[in-house]
Amino acid sequence: MFKLFEPNKIFKITSKAPKYVLFLFIIVLTVGLVEALFISPEDYKQSDAVRIMYVHVPAAWISLGIFSSITFLSICGFVFKNKNFFLISKSLAPSGFVFNIIALVTGSIWGKPTWGTWWAWDARITSMLILALFYAMYLIVWRIYDKEEKVYKISTFITILGIINVPIIKYSVDWWNTLHQPASINILSKSSIHSSMLYPLLIMTAAFALFSLLIFLMKYNTELIKIKNKGLDRL
Amino acid sequence: MYGRKVKLRFLLIVTILIALILITFLILKSLEENVVYFQSPSEIKLLTEIDKSKIRVGGMVKKNSISINSNEVNFIITDFKNEINVTYSGAVPNLFAEGKGVVAEGFLKDRNFFSATKILAKHDENYMPPEVKEALGEK
Image (cartoon, rainbow over all chains, first blue to last red; front, side):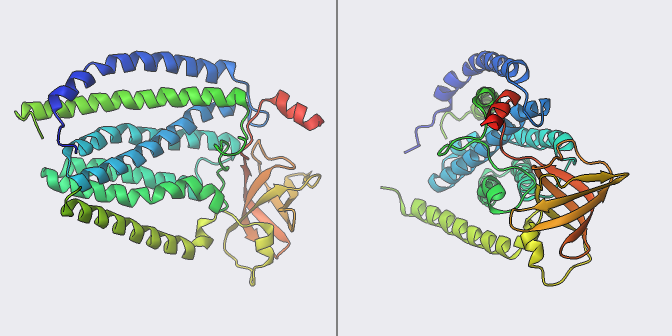
C-alpha cells in the first residue's frame, strides 16, 4: 500500500516548497499581527492583555494538533511497517514542542496581570506541562538510540502514552474546577468570543500552521537527504 | 487484504490504548479531590470536618458584598446556592470585582468563614470589545 515511497520523487516537491511556504507565512503573519495588535479592539475586562491570546491560543491548538498527528502517523508506521510515517512524525515534532512551550510561557505572562499569579497547578495548565514532557521524551528518544527499529517502537509507545493526555487537556476545564477559563470557541454552539476578536485569532492560527509546515519541510528534507546519502533510493 | 502481522500489530496498539485509557480513568477518578483547583461554597458546606490545611474556594463575588476597611477586604463568594464570607488583607488582582469569578486560597475558620492568604481573579470565557459589553448591558 505504501511501498512506493521514493525519496527522490518526494524530494523534488518538498525541496522547492519551503520558499513558497515562507512567502505565504510572512504575508499571513503580517496580516495576523496587524489585526491582532492594532485593528482588533481591546477587551471590556482585561483591556490590552487580551492580545496575548492571539499567540497563546493558536500555539496551544497547533501543539495539540501536531501531537495528535505524530501519534496517528507513528501508529500507522508501526502497523504498516513504513519508515516514511516515522520520518514525517520526527520532522513534525520540534515545531509542536516549540508551540507547546510558547503556549505555556504566554499563558504565564497573561496569568500574572489577569489572575494575579504566574503559575497555578490546575488541571489545564498541568496537563499542558505534561504534554511538553511527552514532546521532550519523544525528541530525546530519537537522539538516544541508533537502531532505527528500536526508535520506531519506543517513539510510538511514547506517543500512545501521551495521546491519552490530549483529551484530558481539552476537557479538563469542563470536567473539573480549574482556574483556566473554559473554551470560548465552540464549533457546535455559539462562540463566546466576539467576531472582531475571532478573525485575528483564526488568521494567527493559519500563520502558525504555516510556520509549522515550513519547519516540517526543512526537517523532512534533511531526513530525505540523509537517506539519499546512504545510497538508498528506496525504503 | 492486509497480512496477519499487520492485523496483529494493529490489535496490539488498540489493546494498549484501551488499557491506558482505563488506567488513566481510574487514576483520575480516585484523585478527583486533588485534580480540582478549588471547591465551591456548596462543597465546603458538605465537608464533614474542617481541615486545618490550606484549601481554595472559588465562585462568584456576590454583588454589593465587597467592603474595604483599612487593610482588610471582606467579601462573599457565592455559587448561587451557598455562600461563604471571606476576609483578606493585601492587594487584590486588577480583575477582582463584584459579579466576577474569584478563587481564594487560605484556611477555613468554619463552614461560613474563610480567611484568605491569596486572591486570584478567575477570568471567564467571554471576550468582547467594551462597546459590545455596554450594548449588552443596556438590554
